[in-house]
Amino acid sequence: MEKLLYTGKAKQMWQTEDPDVLRVVYLDQATMLNGKRKDHFDGKGEAANDISTLVFEYLIDNGIPTHFIKRLSEKEELVKKCHMFPLEFVTRNVCAGHFASRFGLEDGMELAEPVEETFYKSDALDDPFANESDAVAIKACTHEEYQQCWELTRRCNKLLTPLFKKAGMKLVDFKLEFGKLSDGSLVLADEFSPDNCRLWDIKTNAHMDKDVFRKNLADLTTTYDEVYARLQEAVKED
Ligand code: C5P
Image (cartoon, rainbow, N blue to C red; front, side, top):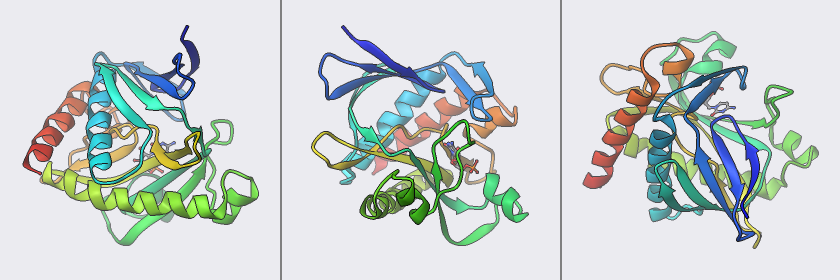
């Protein structure tokens, strides 16, 4: 019998009969303000699953260790069970979002180098900033694990920035999460979809990510479908 482990903001995680394998179900919903606003969008779960599957397969093909096993159906995938680090690894290639507001800068400003920010995952605390010594002090990870997560994040940025560029989009920023498998190896986990990155059209700078929902700009599912269609073309050319 499968058991529901938890329902998150955009996904459910189910324990399958294999103790090392989980089934992920992508939900037709989007949330903002750490879950304080939640809306339903037909087809959004499928579009997010399509994009995340494509990105994870691309990263695996390029040597990144991940939890991903396979896409099961329109809204479902199988992943290896991980012990997750309670941390979010955010990379910013272009100034936007909270970075722009924190430093009083314009969205779109070029950055001298990619910004690396780590946050402690806690809805109650609104995901506070956590540097390496914070993360180690609160036992979220070790120094080595923190460094390994950032090394993998940099490799993902080097692979994904050109992939999205080929698909006509700027990878403005993104958030990754990591975990450890039962054998102790460290892997990229969670998802990669426009729910957890910012994508701007290269020509028009139009938002092609969850900001469409945050700022009420266009239909979310239509936007995600467009991202998927462009990525499929880009991967074909690769
Ligand atoms: O909000 P902020 O500008 O800090 O977000 C930076 C990037 O990290 C964005 O792509 C956002 O979607 C992602 N993010 C996320 N989950 C969070 C916080 C940020 O996916 N809890």
